[in-house]
Amino acid sequence: ETAVFQTPNYHVTQVGNEVSFNCKQTLGHDTMYWYKQDSKKLLKIMFSYNNKQLIVNETVPRRFSPQSSDKAHLNLRIKSVEPEDSAVYLCASIQQGANSDYTFGSGTRLLVI
Amino acid sequence: GEKVEQHESTLSVREGDSAVINCTYTDTASSYFPWYKQEAGKSLHFVIDIRSNVDRKQSQRLIVLLDKKAKRFSLHITATQPEDSAIYFCAASDTNAYKVIFGKGTHLHVLP
Image 1 (cartoon, each protein chain N blue to C red):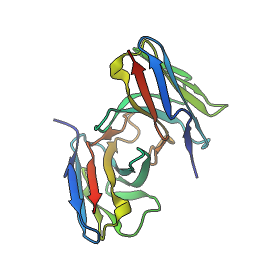
Image 2 (cartoon, chains in turn red, orange; image 1 turned 90 degrees about the horizontal axis):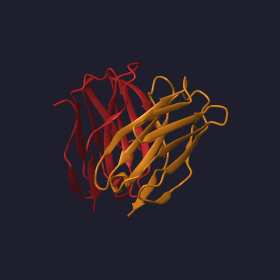
Image 3 (cartoon, rainbow over the protein chains, first blue to last red; image 1 turned 45 degrees about the vertical axis):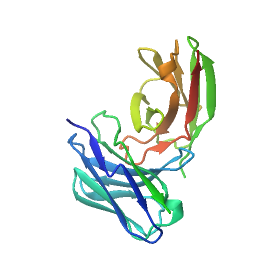
Image 4 (spheres, each protein chain N blue to C red; image 1 turned 120 degrees about the vertical axis):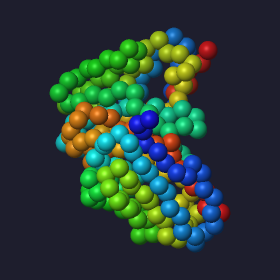
């Protein structure tokens, strides 16, 4: 099956802890993204990687750091979570210049208590 | 910075009627305009897109229109069905699609 796979689906943690979210795509795409979707469903781009190179790095707190081992993987680490980090984190991928559309993963819902 | 404004936050239509969702964008370099649908509790999935070399595109009951002069694009859903009820997001990016900017979403309710 070719798709964008995210783990975990759901994570509950306490303020100050570190969390890591994984994203893998088996579509052969060369560009991957992390988006944050808040409780009002607003989508904000966080990072974009093309062939393991950081392309877009929006103004996000320093505690967020993307990690890419190859073009099929883009993980997201949050060093010391805060309550406002509670959201759904969506990973997506696209093949540049191939008339393809974004494919989204199913999302990781983070709850910080 | 670049913005995509999605004008209708909520839209209710009767089953069988048409629904229209309007978006405007600010970046003149934008050339790719996808639309995504998000059903309750699920992720986004692509429904249709339009590129700046055309001003109209249709896929079954979905029609997208693009007015580059006015920096405006719209999604028309004809003969709406209950399963069309969802949040619809418009988006815009340049050709590279490195940075796709999304609108705030429109909650579409198709009433029986």
